Image (tube, rainbow, N blue to C red):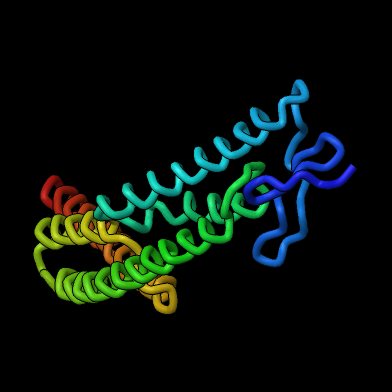
Length: 199
């Protein structure tokens, strides 16, 4: 008994196959249930349409979002599934759409990282100025504001991210360690004065 061709695949010995796409071999995706070839093929075509709808929904979400980068992992997961999903449809075209969307998202991520790098460079400059403020209260308040802004700003470019983070942490921690020492010295000095006065 020969193959029965269906859109994007074929039926052979009661099994349904997706024809090879994008260099992949033919792949068994299911069986004909209750000897109803038409209903079984429709079932797998619907599965593909549902999968395609997920891609459409993702595209809509990305287009309407200010933070496109947050959808990258979801996109990569869908892209990977195009190679193993059990449906009947044009997975090659679907994969191409996902690749285009990935390029768009990655370009936006790079753009955001460049902007974040510039913001963080400015914050490092602000930090360098804040440590010079002679009033510890004012300086501490300024440092805490800078740290809050630093955390609210997204990642800098990958090439300089670790260096910037380390520079910020070292300077921030050094300031507060020095503040503790100065305050401790001040307390000891006050205690000595009090003891001298009492004596």
